[in-house]
Length: 461
Picture 1 (cartoon, rainbow, N blue to C red):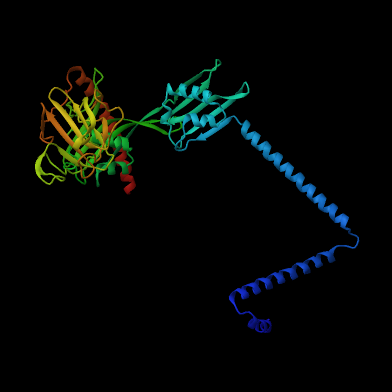
Picture 2: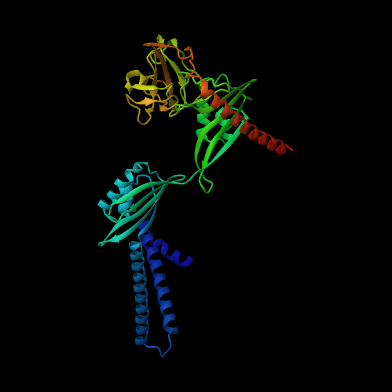
């Protein structure tokens, strides 16, 4: 091979000629290989085998393959018909799905899907369906078309939406609820870090933790009063389905904070008029008229106090008419007291702004909110501790925080210095019933925490 290359190389003067030569050489080798292979195949055919027989065998093979192909096509067609005739559908919702779209996707027409939608709307807002939820639909054939026969979906633990087709062609929708099993749970521990972190680490649900903090926010400054090593105790309701799943958390029956040597205890009580509040063991309500820190994020610092300060944007000295509480964007903001919303709008430097009138003397205002809670508009009545919006940085703001103002008789005052007036204390028959109730709670508490302490001692051994 080297000799051949040496002989022909002088005649190849350019790169293009060299490429042409190589291509031709490769094609020649390939042609030689094909000829040799065909010769070997012919040699392997028996002398008794004729060209006609080979053609017949080729025809038979072709026919068998065609038959297989027809069978496969037929099987595919049957499978598609089975899917099309399947009237039972389990649909897991994806982002962007709507009830109307998924119903029409099962084969029913728009009018039938709309009838189902309107029946559902009477008991459940179809817009509240969320991605990941499952909807089971059973269709039936009627006059050559498909209609929804039944629809069901678990909308929350222990509650199912059920839609059924009536004999007259109308639909009935209902929410079926499991009979829930009530249980009392307890938790106690020492605070290491934040109270919410310590309680959550001990298995207390986040909703219960938020309620616990809200109860004490009227009398405890969580940033200043609560220290590492302080303790907490809580007894709360839990509701389970028949199969043991948690359907919902209930109310806090008993709550206590151990702040150094002081123990602040609160008991839930419903008076004869149906009012519910938390009281100490003597029946005194610790709930104040206005909260000093009306938000879920209780461990935050104060970035700007009431009074004269250097403005962070204008860089001059002017009066700051409220208290600024920095907090993560989206944190919950609560109503500082019972009242009626007077203003809920975007207002210049305040950004998204709400003002609540509590009585003839006091109002509170909330600024720089990221957004308002659902239903917050002028004329809406709110309860103390109810979510009214979310922390943001709208308007003239340098970062997410709540700007909180207290207005007394039309004049803005320092939220940190207002005198706290207690709610109505228990007396008479209410006080008698309360004493009877807390005796039962205390008996339950002693048994629960005694058992817990016993188990902890055994665990340490």
